[in-house]
Image (spheres, helix red, strand yellow):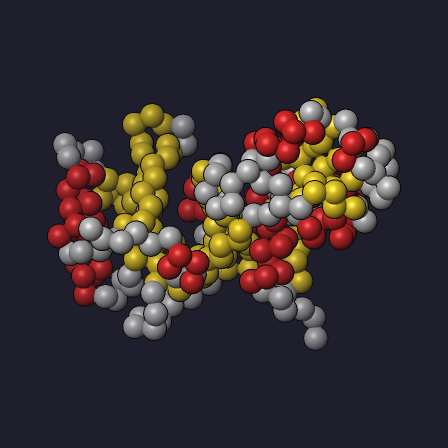
Length: 285
């Protein structure tokens, strides 16, 4: 029987590849050059799912996803949190003392400033972490190192010279899992996240009024972000996550109020909250 495939953006060994292996060990990971390609693989049936990073606890939100997601016609069916562990790697036989350059994605370099400063090496920005590991392996120059995942070191046959070199221990990436068909989580079966987009009417205090329903009905909103529509400074779409299921009475009331003050609303997914959320929930004072 052919394995189902899960697409991701990046080369083999990328953190998205790692997330695919952890979350869906029975699926075959499918590397894609761009996010658009990863979305398209699901849309055209090449892959059953896509693993897409949406935000990082250090670097913030991942650019483009908020624009691509609503237009893709795909649905969020799950989320995954991956603690990011960066490894410093080089060709076999290399030593920490002999390294002169280290290359990786700009975010990874920014997240590992301490080791780069300590080793007094030149940082080189590359397209992605796994790609930098592959290129360092192909060159075989023992003065060149890369920062990437442990999986990348295994795939490209590199030695890990320093483990877990990230500056912040809380460095975590949140992923959303996309599918062609909507598959809402069952209500009353554990914590649920509902993700939706909306565009408010062009009237005074429309956003304030649209948000009022969540406050008065006791619905916790964990994310609210705005983004421009097709480069129009006066057309703003909002992307939101809330705790709860649309069938919950208080969520139903809040969404009705949102719709009343909005020009457009669309639910992108209703999915189980990942257990990692419980580790960072704030205590009400």
